[in-house]
Image (cartoon, rainbow, N blue to C red; front, top):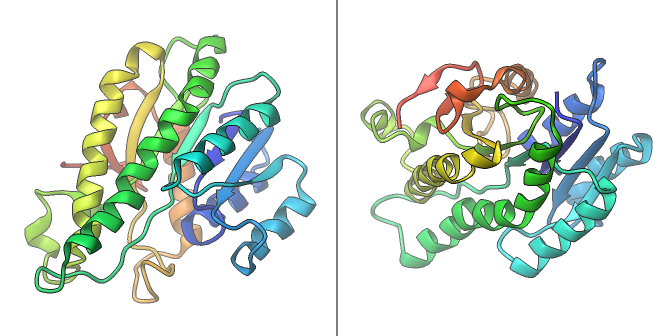
Length: 254
């Protein structure tokens, strides 16, 4: 597994559970685990602060993905925390899924969600790219992997254009679905642009998870989803570069 990991949106849901399970890893937990959220001192980050108090390898960074100044500041802080080493794994997890139908959608609805779910990951990746490149260059491995350098964008099966007929009536959430389809395109473009740098780029569908976004009606607990995702991350290789896979490692169509 990677020696250094950064997770955005780490104060709740999938992001928080990813941090918890990375910290609990018996074999090679990350030497540096950077967990970001919008308000590290707020009530919403209380559990994350409690974890940081117990685990010296966990560092909380303030990062608002839609604010370029915040993103750049977090990247500078991360660089100092990494002590000259690069960043092995960036998980773009922060996102929103507001109610939105074809009838209710407005220009502002669409743009606000695109700003968080698409522009945010783009800005974060650009800011942390030098650290990812540094990790890839320093790695003795020639093959692509999360242990070397990787960008993982948290996507969804709802982004799959081919799968729309199966799920349209159940999950309209228009702005979310469109923004995640765009994130898939970004992932594919990143996979082409960063391959020569030795950086693996993959999008992952975490399943329908019991979180604030997924609600209690969901199929999976967050613990089950993240356990699966960690297994997938450990096995990611060049064949997964520029693809969309599930929390069980199965390929999904774009």
